[in-house]
Image (cartoon, rainbow, N blue to C red):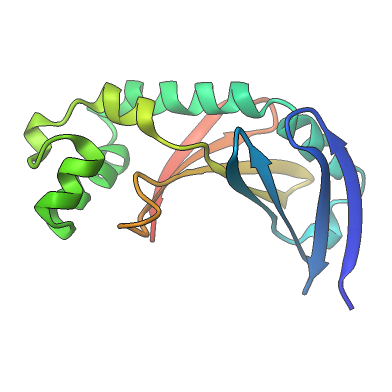
Length: 165
C-alpha cells in the first residue's frame, strides 16, 4: 500500500507526495500547468524533506536561474547546445516552425526559445546526505520526448547539464 504525505508549499499549495517502491511523486499545478515532482529514494530523506520543500518554495526563482544558465551556457556547453540542435534532426519542418519559429538550427533565436519554455518538472535525489535537483525542461511535450536537465544543488547553484530522452 502506498504511503501518502501532505505538505504545504508556497507555489503549489498543499501537495500530496505518494510513496511507492521507495520513491515519492506528486503532480501539482502552477499557473495552470501540470508540474511533476519526483523524489528518488524518498524513503531515505528523513528531515531532508524540509530541504526539498524549501527548494519547492523557490520554484519561480529556480526557473529563472535555470533559464539564465541555459542562455549563458548555450554557446560553450555541448550538452545544452546539442539539446536544441538535435530537434532539427528529428522533427518535421512544421513542428520546428511551431516550436522554434524557424526550420534551421542556425536561424534559431535561443533567447526567444528559452523564454517560451514551459515550467520545468523537478526531480530530487539524495546522496551523501545532500539534496540534488534536476530542473527538467522540454521544448515540446507534444512532439519530442527530449529533456534538458539543469542540475542544481541545495543552495541553487548550477552543477551540471544533462540531455535525456
